[in-house]
Amino acid sequence: MKKTTILACIITLFTFGIAKAQIGQFPEMNVPDHTPMMNSTWEAIDKMMYKVTTENNKKVYTPHYPPALKSLENKVVELPGYLVPLNSGRNHQTFMLSVLPVMQCAFCGSNGIPPMVEIFMKSESVRFTEEPIKIKGKMVFNPEPLKGNAEIQIVDAVLIK
Image (cartoon, rainbow, N blue to C red):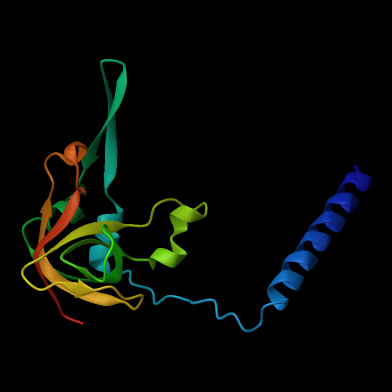
């Protein structure tokens, strides 16, 4: 038992040393950090869950909107976040908005999918940026998300910042 513990400690220290050495080899690389975007609206969005049922031997996931989120339906909200393109190009009228930049998506790691909403701009398009933006628009729930599009949408959106 003692040998196993010592061996585990040695392996951990060795692995940490390699990882630190790899990072140290590239001091000129600026690893971008992100500005935290969570606010009360994002926290309500993050509480959305799915009811799982079975139909014809297939699992069906139906969105469940808790009261805090349901209270925002058809209300105008302001939501800061990072633009996640749905199509190629520089300018976007429809896109996803996330609390994390696409380059630091937690889904790409092991923390699950970050909260996101689908944005439908009222008229103007938004130029892609890795900087945070702020959107204002009406929050609606998609009644049939299995047919495409996100469960939570911001429609008639305008860019604030």
